[in-house]
Amino acid sequence: MTLPILSKIGARLLIVFLVICLTGCKEDFALLDDSGNIVARGTFNMNENFPSPAQLTFNGKEYTGQWRATNIYEESLARSRRLISEHAYLAYELGVDPKQLKHGYASLTAGDGSKIQCDFYYRTQPDQGSCDIDGKILALTVAQ
Image (cartoon, rainbow, N blue to C red; front, side, top):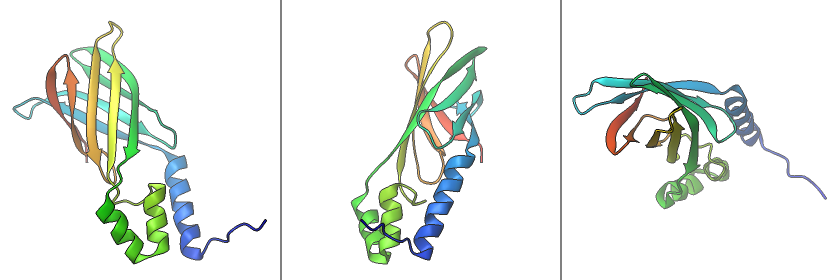
């Protein structure tokens, strides 16, 4: 059996993907009320493994939990990547295309059992979304 040989572009894409996955990073985020005031701060730890750790401090309580992200298949973007090149389409299929839409969600719990559920969509990194805290919806924004 012969193994396929990666082209230079394919090898570079693979190296970039592995470096991003192995380095990991931390994203700071904030929850905003209806007036745009920050009411809570937290972090998402992004690494190669999902679920990834998340923590949030809200009303003096420490919430911890996990966040996950899934790729969303967009037919028009997949088609455009297929037209560009086989490598661009492969990057899209592998989920490493920076323009690929992802759905992130987090479930966080405090020591007293209260929960926060967060939901957000993003392309390169989490940017905006919302969190449900006991039926109250707060805006989620990632520090840029």
